[in-house]
Length: 420
Image (cartoon, rainbow, N blue to C red; front, side):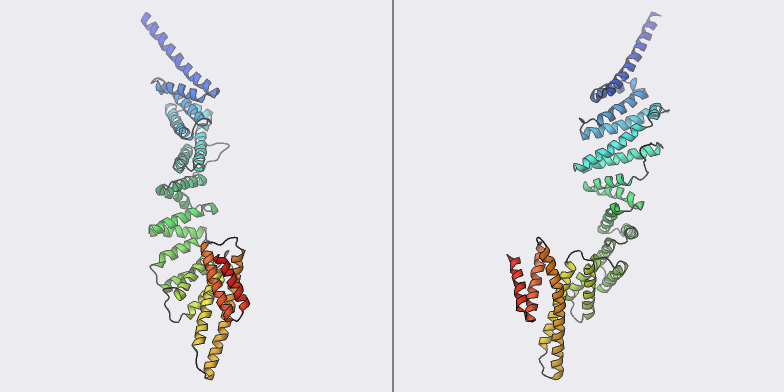
């Protein structure tokens, strides 16, 4: 009996020590001595007997989460502490099927981890540590999904099955980390749900461009069609389609596609401007086909004038002035080629000269408009300077043709100023 009594005393003494240890952990938490509390709670769960008690894991979760939020804790350690806090909470629930402590706190511990991981992801992102930002945002998503799977709700925060902002942050972090697989995965969560709005336009553009580059026609067409429905005024979808056609379709088919796209969105700029470039190269470029291209020349003039109406810069005006100069130059050459003295030859030459002058007047109208734009710029980029110089050379030539030496000298002076 004596030995049994001693053993019983030892048993009750060990229970008292265990209880005291958790009380110490709680006191350290109240005193905000989180690092000491971690040491204490680690000792608790290291004890095989304590490790079977649900409270040991609950207090581990609380301590680890509290320490993760301490200003002295670095971001990398905070991430690990939060993940271990989450696992400790799940372990607590395995051991306490009634969830007594978590029910009492209304499952706030899980919400704290979700919000903490979100903040940690933002911190990493701002510091350009994109891989770590991705891991943090992804963990926040996983935590949110766990909370929803358990039907936990909160008075101050509403959680949604698709947290669009968090999914977007996760995807962008993956993209910045050059993790294409994960970028696509999380972007597809948004596009599959038809999420729209200015914030999400780049999501659809990214996927459309990626699938185009990969020649994934099924996914490419699916995303483009969604893009057209959700962002009907965006030229990007049509430009991708046109780019995909460029090496495979003949010129009439390409031009017909341009006409189709312009008819759908007459207020755009990029499509008619690109169309104009293709027509210009067909007429005046190195690979010009020659022959009678009167219809294409007329179409180029009207298309560029339409593009100018929606041009926020100067590109369409410059291209139109080049086109009009070339037209007037051709007319001038044609007039000079008429050498006969017969009345019909004289009339033909006179008509060509008159038409040349009219064409030059139109050229000067647009060239002067472009010149005014260039002169208003604080500085000109290399391409702008080159375009302006070429245009001024043409203006000098035209003013000389029209016997206006004053304006020719003025344009020459501007050109010389650009050359300095």
